Length: 378
Image 1 (cartoon, rainbow, N blue to C red):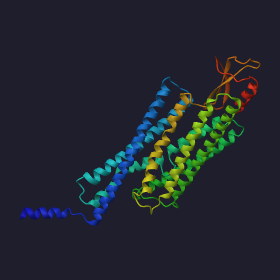
Image 2 (image 1 turned 90 degrees about the horizontal axis):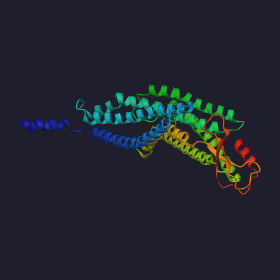
Image 3 (image 1 turned 180 degrees about the vertical axis):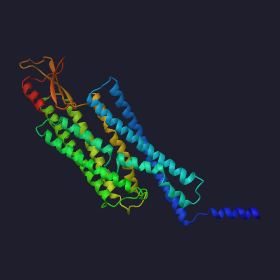
Image 4 (image 1 turned 90 degrees about the vertical axis):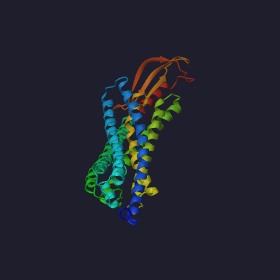
């Protein structure tokens, strides 16, 4: 009878109240969501590693030591470190939640278990890394790096008298976005005591800083993409009218498409961030979508530096080989190779090559000098 009484007493001490059951249910949903987006995050991270490895091999085989390559390599290194820390911190957070919430035997009460989860060092470290790398909306070091690269791509191919004006405007937008990012980080660390996952009202100082900074970043990217798109349109028009093969039109089109994709990603992240308010139910569809875009979008944004390295190193730059005949040449004469190089140099240039290759010539050779002038002006 004594053993039976001790057993019943032990069972009664482990009985969960309705409040405890609700806490367990909420904790289970939190773990389920975190496992889902951590798996997706590491899937994208594996693709990112492949892209980085390919970009690194293109630098060292053959070795390239130009100032441009060093700059791109430094952006690749910074992005790689931030993304690696972001993915590892999320994985460590998941491990910490499972250990403290379900495995640790030192804490008996359910309420105490779940309250300790959000106050561990791993959780606070993950919050710090997320804030620095890719904070709310389109704010963070990763997005500022992508903005700088987008502006760089646009300015070096914008060969018009307004180049300095648009360069100053792009610098102003990017610098203003970064300036608003600094006080956001300070306020984020001061509000670290806010319960995990709770959204801020859109009228709070942190939300306003994030929204304005994100809008400036989007404006800079759209402006840079528009400049690239206009240059691509000019190249396509020149290619159509002169019947000259211009590979730069295809490359510029791809750069425009990538810029549009990045702009759509930024707009989606900002829209989801603004849509999630304190009254939004936790772990709802909207809340989950916002979390997925926050993490997945950061990794996709970090893919820009290695992608740009591949574009530059594998000839997928804004460089063209323009084939023309000398004045008075007869039909069927081999065409002289003229290279139009705007591969992210400070100023675009047209340089002559010594290679002579046989290509199908146009029906007449007249107008080639005018076409070459158009290429120079473009």
